[in-house]
Amino acid sequence: MRRVHIIGRKNSGKTTLIVELVHYFVARGLKVGTIKHTHHQHELDTPGKDSHRHRVAGASVVGILSGNLTAAFVPCDPDLPRERRYDILAPLYETCNLVLVEGDMQSHAPRVEVWRSATGQEPIAAKEPGVAAVISDEPVAVPVKRLPKSDLAAIAAFLLSLVNQSDRT
Image (cartoon, rainbow, N blue to C red; front, side, top):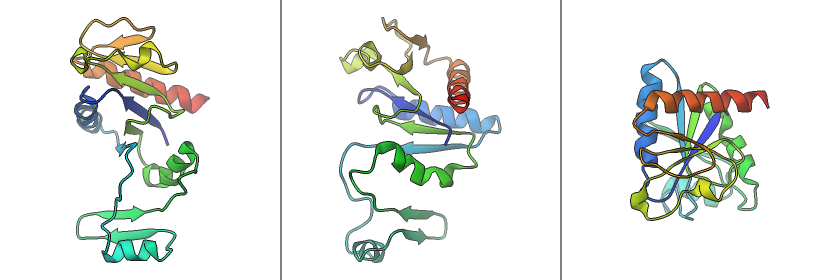
């Protein structure tokens, strides 16, 4: 899976940037997938519904097909290594040129940070090694490349270069 993680503090603009990037890439003929990572524990399925009952009974995978969406619930051992969980999803994204993951600062995949001073916190990249760039329209002192949030073309090109580099490693 050719993925890049868009990380940042709460209310930094991660979702807005991902939506803008999806529009940008799709308009240029690329297939883009997205994944929303959350550190919160919550039930994705609806307790008591048939699909939930199937899973509780021990089904390895539970699928739901409706008129306009298809979904699958794959129970995972909470101790399963993080990268292995992405491997489970990989077949669903095999036709994508790029997968944008919102969040997951602990991933080994390329990461870029969206930063705004309004969050009241310093950039993650100031202390966290491995962040490839900070995306912000504000001046910020970080030891990595800064890309202006207003320059979507530059951000898109940088993200594609990141996944191309990780393809070669």
